[in-house]
View: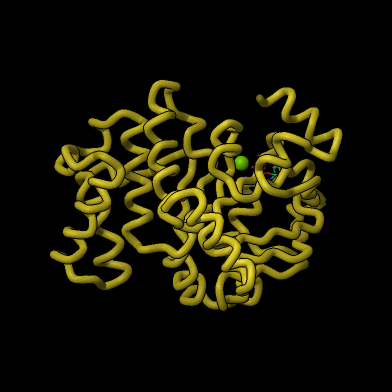
Length: 260
Ligand code: ADP
Ligand code: MG
C-alpha cells in the first residue's frame, strides 16, 4: 500500500468505530498510580506510537490492551470486546489470539526449530491443520526474510533474527492487531535496522500496530498518530509531523530534545 492509499484508508476508517479504545483508564500498583486517566484510540490500519520517558506507563498501557492487567477504573475495548469486563480465562485467551504481542525479550522456544516455533500455536491453540500451518509459517518466514533459517534453532540466530522470528510467530496467529514493546531495545545496533524494516513492511501492508519505541526517527516515519506519555498521563497526541515538528507541550519538546 502506498502512503496515499494508507492515508485514504485511514480517512475512511475514521467513520467507523476504532479497533482499540481506552477511555479514562486508571491503574494502580498498590499506592503507586501508574496510569492516571489514559484516553487512546487506534483505528483499523493505523500505526500508533507511544513515546515517553522510562517508567511513564507505556508497557502498562499495552498490557491493559491485552487484558494482562486490569485497570481499577475506565474502559478498554478491542473490536467488539469490552476487555475490562472479561472475567473468564477462556475469554482472555480468545482476546490474546486476536492481539499479537512482541516484547524486548523474544522468548522463542529454544528446543524447537524456527519453523516449529511458528507452527506450534496455530496447531495447538488455534487447532489448525498442520500442513496448512506449515505453509503459512513458510510464507511468514519469507516475509521476515528468514526462509533460509527454518531448520535452525533460536540459539543459532542473531538477536535481530530471533526478534524477526518472534514477530513471525505472533503473525502466525493471524492477529488483527500487533503490539510492539521496545522490540529493538535489547539488540546490537547493527541488527536494529532489519527488525525495523520488517515492522515498516507490516505497517505499509495496513496491519494495525501499536508501538512503544525509543527509535524516534522510525516512530516519526511510520506513525499515523503519536502519543507522548509522562508519569501516567498522555501529555499530548496527534499526527506524527505535528508531534515531532510542532509539539505543543514544553514537556514534549524537552523529551524530544533529549531523545532525537
Ligand atoms: P514504561 O514502559 O513507560 O517504562 P511501565 O509501564 O513499565 O513504564 O511502568 C510504569 C510504572 O509502573 C513504573 O513506575 C513501574 O515501576 C511500575 N510497574 C510496572 N509494572 C509493575 C508491577 N508489576 N508491579 C508494580 N509496579 C509496576
Ligand atoms: Mg516499558
